[in-house]
Length: 581
Image (tube, rainbow, N blue to C red; front, side, top):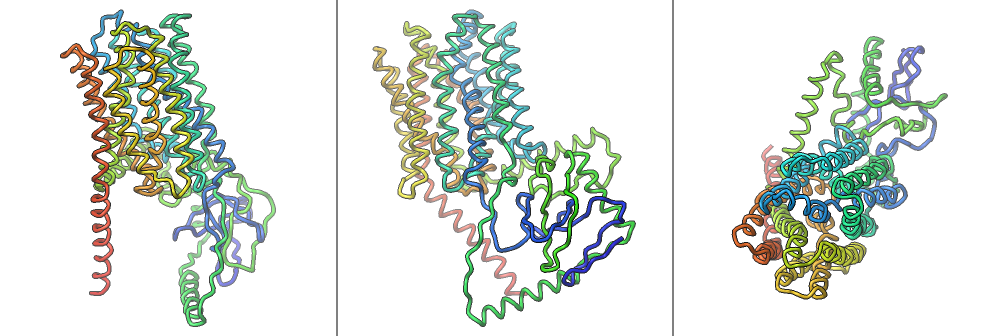
């Protein structure tokens, strides 16, 4: 063992036979041990870990973030298009097989239910597998779902292929895009969000005509196989999803001049803290040093290993050591927070069975999911969840039922495909414009968000009353504008109301409510259609659910005041406890 003293701090290295050195990096009041070669006065290259306290790690707000935005664009272009393509792609097949409107609605609604419920488990899955693995696996699963749907023996088989498999894969992939993109941007978040929204809308524009063309040329089986092959290309987009910790940028804090008395008091506090840290330094013997190498050995075996550079030296000018030459690509997909909370989850018992490890992983995912659901205790989140539930259920069910309603009125599938595409073009324009405008402080995001609810509901009430195709197209254009005004600010409104740190649990909890909404509203719409034999009444019912989203938003000021009072009470309780002590 070799002991080196640096400014009162003792650093212990293993014997000379060991190539890797262990350096303790203090971050967020906890120690993380990583193999490291120390180089004098070099900056830390490991993302998220700082060697000095004079800076702050912030999102890149560009750089690799634009490639992440490109990845979300590719996934959003290919996967969400299966929603508007459902009616065009499967309507002929379901009608020829004699499927009822209730069966069709159940297939679509169960898919939407599973699609949205997967958003709740996306964050725990990311913590276990990493961003890219989750994105690639979910994309492959969605592609497989459409490939096997081409060989569907009966309409009920679509419950397995489309509802279950594509619901799981597409739900995770799309949720991944909504969660990762805001982490890479701060000032340019609106512009980056508009790129992802452009992908969603372009998929809706191109998807229905392409599906119709493929059906005319290759039939139901050939068209479904080709759509499955196209979806497989979303794996390319998932490859850009690096952990944001790899690309954080350090911004220097501005020096603040303090009065002489305050400066002396601050120096005294720092001296006490450094003295306490020096006294708590743990000295290791040789056997303990060999045990200290076990965590990294296990981590290297599981994550692919870390590679350090060659010669190194210790800075004697400062007691803080930094990671200088770690190969970032070797770190895999381990976020810094994951290393801090549970650095080496498999160190205690290296002989655990694989089934036991899988069960522990599953339990961690379940615990993380349950923890995210507790955010529903906030009435603000409940209102956001109600908005999303009523709006998205009405929106997607309306898009699904339009081809059936137009065919019943004597229109062709080509007419319905063009109506959906026109609405998607207007949807695209409004999403891009609204998302970009959200970066400006004077832009009223909440007013625009609520106005989208109102416009969407009015067009849904109007569409069944129209007969001429041109007026139907014009109404669908207004429908697309309303959708774009709301969906362009969907996650931005969540961040505006609850903050960026709460985006993942808020998005998951909202999607959880939306999922159960699809399970209830979808079959109800099909039941209304079978009972009344009228698509108009079904569309009016969907317009009413969207209007409820606008009305519920007026409860947000009261919910904000309630959360503020509850937060004030929680802050007052520790103060009372400290005063008693």
